[in-house]
Image (cartoon, rainbow, N blue to C red):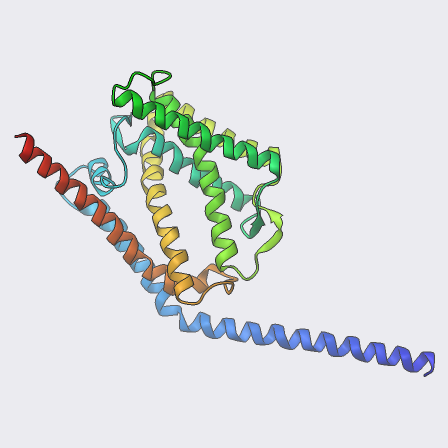
Length: 298
């Protein structure tokens, strides 16, 4: 075989490989477009469901909005030691407020850093710090519980600022975990070489944002009372919703298939059902138990 014929064979092989890739890409785009068209009603249903839930919260008459948010989450949080800012009581306790506000901050920063498809855990030194955040919140939680039960072995007097600080740290870990869970279970285009958080600078950005939240709360910046209360409220609900979304999507066969969030219109709509049922069940159960205790004590 001459050098010229060998070159022609290689060029022909390259052309066939390129053509095959183009055909596969075209086929994938066609499948995606068909699914996109098929799911159009589900995208509308998702928007209507989300809008209906928000409007029901905002427009239900007779009760102040902060009390309605408090009632909705009554079964999911102890709601002791709640933050009060600008005359508004946050719907969940100081620790949980820190957790879920921080979680949303973390997910926002990761997305802005272009790591929304990341599929690797952070480097070990950063991972160790995240584990430390979890441990510190656990220690403070146990200490606070011991103090509340008047046990003699609690280590220090608990304050809301400490509860919030340890909650903020925990929220970073939860936010990163949810992103990894979503990407590794549902995405087809996950970047398995990209850590969800790669450098100390990136962690520092998240911690700086959380510090500003802390300053706003305990510096009595009343202008941010409602935004932060909403973040705490929707942050807690979004964790339940995200877990429901992942489970529903897996049951419907969406594992390792998602390249665009619009593909999840159908499971995203159906995930409202277990989310709302779970929240309602726990809330009604707690109100019922409190009513029974009131009858017994009365």
